[in-house]
Image (cartoon, rainbow, N blue to C red; front, side, top):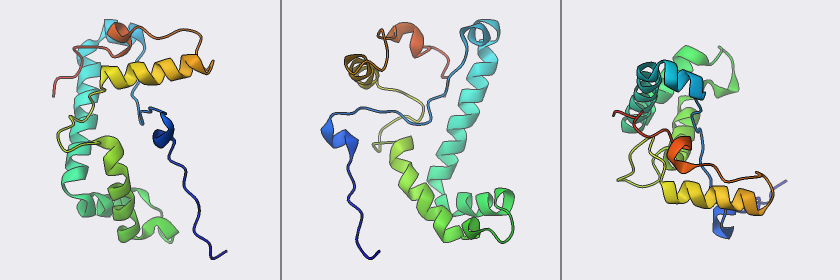
Length: 135
């Protein structure tokens, strides 16, 4: 319509959020913690590779996953998408991919409790599954 959209960043208003959180059932963690760790390690190594060379990753996405003739077949578009996702994967240059800041997690949980989204706060010691991340 020719007008720039107004963007409301919820983080500017106190909302703490995580993206692409990986969830594993307690039974899986108990039965095969090595498999859970291997999945986490592979996932985070993949993100490290993507962030290190976004154009190559974008080309891989187009070549491997985008159907011929799709409007998403544009490598420049895919590269820009990865550039926009990067701050969510590693919000600061020193952030370790896959690590959740317990204070941020607690603040997000508290807001959800305050607004009635959850009935009780999660136990941080168990909900963040300490010890499973090896890389």
